[in-house]
Image (cartoon, rainbow, N blue to C red; front, side, top):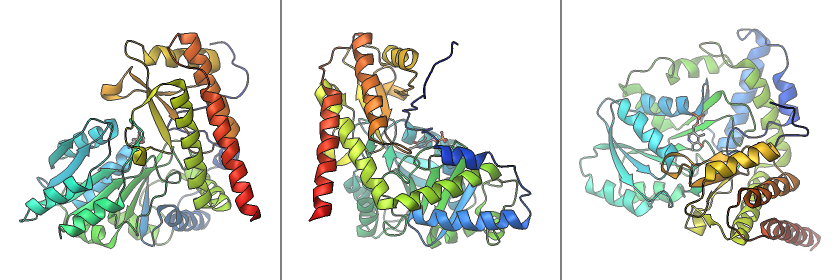
Length: 398
Ligand SMILES: *Cc1c(COP(=O)(O)O)cnc(C)c1O
């Protein structure tokens, strides 16, 4: 491949752009993970993670992808043959469902058109019918990264409570943590699953479980086989900042830095920034006269937008044009959205001009690839960004 000048904009919904500060932190020499210096680092990041999960409970860290953290959540809380309720709202939820089946769980799958989120009324109806309390868990993907649909989690917990049902609530917040408001404690989530390579602005390689007291209690009797993923040895060692096996030391240096950056910006400001970039992207999509996969405006994702190309067009050919010409990888259509959809990630270490560059690459790419569209997406997005900035500024002066 020939040299491509300038910086590459990684506009995937994960992995996301890794900021310089994090890259520099990652490059420090690896230390002894059984020594006192490491223990301080361990204690610091384990404590800091609680802020981003919005929990006062325990968060454990695995050297793994997000999928590993899915497996940890299931195997620590459930037993072979346990019935669980899952919603196939996109490719990631489909993969989690597939994993649950492979692990020997009895999954009741609620299907959807992949354009809507989890319906709390369905949760309530299913659990009310289940008088014998056969369902042991309800599993929800908060932000379905394949479709750009964000499901409201609090109403799912309310539905479980209204049905007066003891099922655990397990939530995948892999592409929402540190980009879309997520509240482990307040929303009554039992296990939150996440990963490093999305809102946390790190390379891939860390998986997380935030664990409620109820989930911890369930882990004492859960019988699915687990060893690498077992919470208890983690929690025991974590008490002194250490790990039961070799942790991803350098990624933890990066995590310390990214937690510090999130603290400097302020989580509420991080969420507001993502909301603003999500809205600007949607304005561009509308101006282009293209179609958002997500149908319900209340469920629009602020970290990723999935966009249909018009029928008969190839989303993959379009993505190739953008990659070859502008050195910008866009997210591919996954599962049944393959070649029909491209995705713009607008999460992580991101600002107005990076979004402007991203949308410019998309708009020029649409033209070059011959995808029917209207012009003016960039202008619509920039007008919104400008107006919302001026509005915020005038509010600040009141
Ligand atoms: C990225 C992602 C995953 C998968 O994470 P891996 O790190 O690739 O295993 C799962 N769920 C959601 C919602 C994701 O966005």
